[in-house]
Length: 280
Image (tube, rainbow, N blue to C red; front, side, top):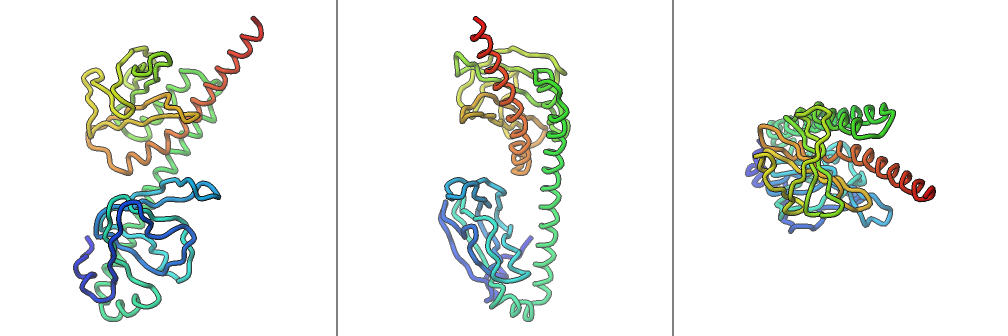
């Protein structure tokens, strides 16, 4: 773990506090600082529109984590993402141009410890990214291999998601189109390829009531699936220990592929309905 108190008292690191939802820096800003989080939390985001009105979250960083380590290689590199404060944050930072070399000369051992920490953490980030890329590749490959979009093949993708994420089981719910405060349990990975039609009451958009004696907790994670900005399905993932941020990020990422498949099914259903109406 980083020795934050040492860096604060070394005379080479600067310190600042920022309130929630403020920016540490924006995308394309120039900045020569390496940042270390003393507390609490920031989000790494990237703009998804030219107008910079919408962003996509890439990562959440917590206390004792660091960011913008690219400043250690060279200066005047424009930012490839923006950093937003999620919860009031305390930051330490050191300028590559003016202070890093002086810090290295005075504290070579402490610099080596910091460098080892950065290398180790970077390797762990790469492994997590590789896991997410591999999982998405496997899901996309399975979707491409589908010859017909139907419930059976959709269930097979859900089974695949359960398999590659190593969770105990996955439940798949559809929002009742008539009574929206009810959900229909359509599939349970514990009952392979068996179509379910169990109606269950829903308390809100984010929490569900007891499901077959399964109460949502740290051991469950609910993922909404939406198309046309409407929540149409829910998936509940269960495992025998609490979900980490990386678990949730992986689920959100691979669920996007399932949402695309479900959207194609809805489009096909609408097309069939239109053709039916024309023939009446």
